[in-house]
Image (cartoon, rainbow, N blue to C red; front, side):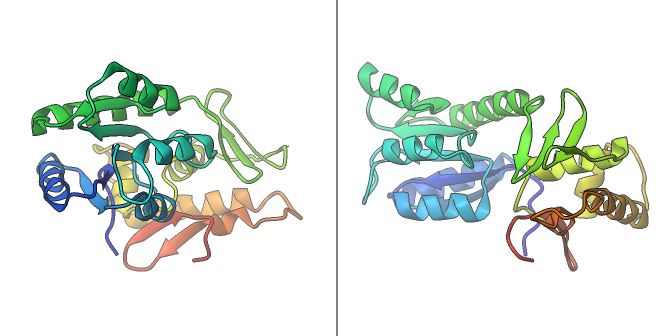
Length: 239
């Protein structure tokens, strides 16, 4: 299983040459990339793989990109997923329509690879900034970064500051597998040396904290899954 440490971009375009060109551009820029050629394939990939951003062509077989964007923005699980529309349409009405749906940016074909990468980085920066203080909720588990509170079914969960950072990181990056090294960089910082055992200890403490609220409908500690030989992931799906 691939360990995803860099942002993953989903390329949705029905032209193989464009998908290949964008894929190479993203790889050279340090991104992970995946692709789909129809709106249906794209929706399945988004639900299953949770990419960090979608490059979405306007014209697609079996449903337009703008229709998929509208669907994603209406769904609570994908409403905050950043979307950049890729299109040959240049009229102002089309751009307004895309922005009204809630897409984050609009790139007109043909475009330069450097411009595309710059747009992606800008949208990801804005998206990350907008999410910093937003309450994160999974079922009845809620984390509020601004008040530094965690609750399960409205009952407060007591945990240390490191476990809070771990939980915030996991809840913000669901369904992805992260190595211990990547978790260390994101939670403790890249200049701190930790033994693997230290990270495992904090994971156990976090699971214990999530188990402290009894008789809940969901075992929230089990959402933090150990992936043998790879690391950890936060997932609402069975391990």
